[in-house]
Image 1 (tube, rainbow, N blue to C red):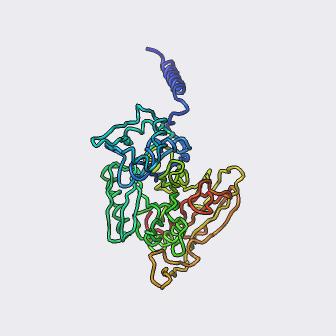
Image 2 (spheres, rainbow, N blue to C red):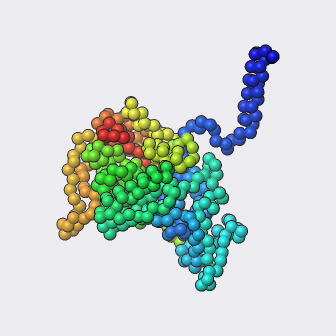
Image 3 (cartoon, one colour):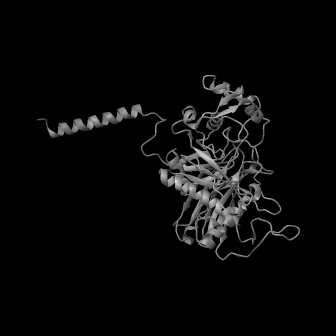
Length: 441
């Protein structure tokens, strides 16, 4: 029988040798066993030929993959990219011109692109489902596709659209008697699928000013909805409002003020998205690359990303990159560090509503004095600027008198591909400091 010392030494030598061998086989691209949280860039609202976009899903995924994104959800209207689907070449050319097929063939080749002439003699191309093309575009730890749908409903003659990210089955839109009932019905339908299928699914409300369908009071009242688009890159969504309707960012402040003060409920978190439909020069101006989310998570998986977003560990951006967003709940300090780009200058505003704000509001009326369906007009106490900071580092010390505080960082340079006049590059952090005012988190 060998000595215990020698046996122990042999064990440790074997263990060390195994670890060294493991280190030699693990490359830089492998997933570490305990990764630190990091920022992942993604877009959760985009369209393809599966509904009203003008390019093939593989081509769209390739654009995002090669432009620094880590995840993408193709969210076509009331459909999932699955099953057998053919599109006529005439329809392809009508939407995108002859360039779409040329670029598709050039990138993926004739062995991938499937063409046929149907029984009526019409030339067609097959749209590939996500299950087929994801292997061509995904990269472990670098780029991820997430199945998604834009649930497109109507209520009171108005469009009510929500995106469901990481769904397993298509969710047909539900209609309610009112806009609020319709939002809630569709959120509940998403939640029901999440429970039944055991999946993490994120549902968010799209472009509230599209058709001026959603008021801030609607956003406040539907408490089961926790996410909405504070920025949408489509040019038809009235991001800045008009003479009778408020800008989307102001809707956020009114809704969060009402949620926290009136309903003792958590606030909305804000996303930025592209809502892109157009991918070819000269064929429309709702292009990709205008707005995205940056999510701080350990893993590039749908579950890890969605769980981080539920915690508010993300920000929305149209061009400004933040190195860090830190909120010390115990000390009541919100701190932001900005990643500089070129000769940009940065201006940070801390925005919120204080306890004891003036609650008076009045309806919006037209020239004849008739009420208009619009967010009511509130006092300047709602969504006021609490502090302003210049430079790459901005800190706000909460006093405890705030219902919530959020930050918006604006760069000095304009957006390279603006969706509205005068647009500059920005980043929006999520509201903090509301926890002490709500009944349950």
